[in-house]
Amino acid sequence: MPQNAAMIAAYYNISYITMQTFLLSLSARTKLKGILEIITSATEFETIQIRRHEDGILRRIYDRVPVKMSQPAYDSPHFKAFVLLQAHFSRMQLPIDLSKDQEI
Image 1 (cartoon, rainbow, N blue to C red):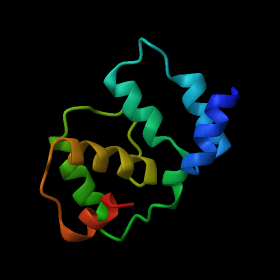
Image 2 (image 1 turned 120 degrees about the vertical axis):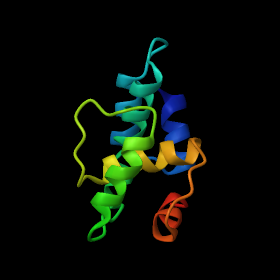
Image 3 (image 1 turned 45 degrees about the horizontal axis):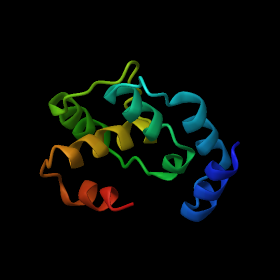
């Protein structure tokens, strides 16, 4: 990993695995869908909880967001991050518990 990337990772408390994924996956030609999938694949999102019955709410929100995943795994924390990030960009009103998850 280049020194600048290591310094950024240390400053923002980003894991080595996440930074390595970003460095290997992002390029000047990466489109929005790819950027969203790469960012939400970060290991830091693995700690997001999926509450009971939340997968149905996430699916409904996913139906309304503009960018779709290549292979959505509806019960994955990475899917939840993907949906919440787009909901934030789209300024969607979310249920209170999902709004709190966006603050993470």
